[in-house]
Amino acid sequence: MVVRPASADYGIWFRRTDLTSGDALIPARWDAVEPTALCTFLTNGHGATVQTVEHLMAALAGLGIHNALIEIDGPEVPILDGSAMPFVDRLLARGLIQQAVPVRAFRVLKVVEVRDGSALARLEPADMLEIDFAIDFAEPAIGHQSRKLNMSNGSFVRELSDSRTFCRAADIDAMRARGLGLGGTLDNAVVFDGDKILTPGGLRHPDEPVRHKMLDALGDLALAGGPILGRYTGVRAGHTMTNRLLRKLFADPYAVEQVDVGGPAGRKLPGMGVRRTDVPAHA
Image (tube, rainbow, N blue to C red; front, side, top):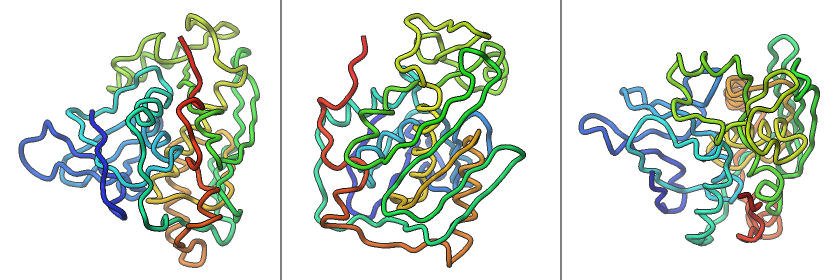
């Protein structure tokens, strides 16, 4: 997989380099998402697909990268260590160039919410992107966790980027039966079994699961096509609910407006002021 720079207002696109016929370009956009519970799955409607894009999308959004062409030679983004940290580190190592145009963002104008039983995902007006997430699992090693974070000034890189995907031991067979996580091992996911953590080395943060859910939410929100200016609240929410939320947001012309963000306001966007030394170090 190669991430290439792109011109202003290009957006984020994937190109399947292994496809020799048909349309190989896939937009990283909310209306290209096919519903799936375990990852974010994109399609261009002509047979080209790419899945498990959420960690890479979170890395791009968290670094303030809004224009890029991602060339990939297969249908799934590499899982690496199960977090966004390897993507963040490599992108910062190559260097980022600020484009001389304002960033096109989406300002939330009113509360938009979707629910599924006790789960909910909500967007409401705020000056910058904030994420408030809560999870509740029966496994004692996870339990109830909640966290709030203002996403400005590189907080994603410092606080969330190293948090790995997690699952229960009983979920692994179900994922592989659906063709997901085929390269998954205890080295790229935190696996819980009741009150035990099966992954060697344990957790990177005591609340690593909820931090990873926030990472996923940022990656899924990045499919808006630009930064969100609003407060996202997720309670037991997943990829499908966040996509449903974006679809509801953009279906209501009174719920959102596109704005150009620059100057002092632009310095509050995710990714501004990030340095490579902000990336958490893990053996």
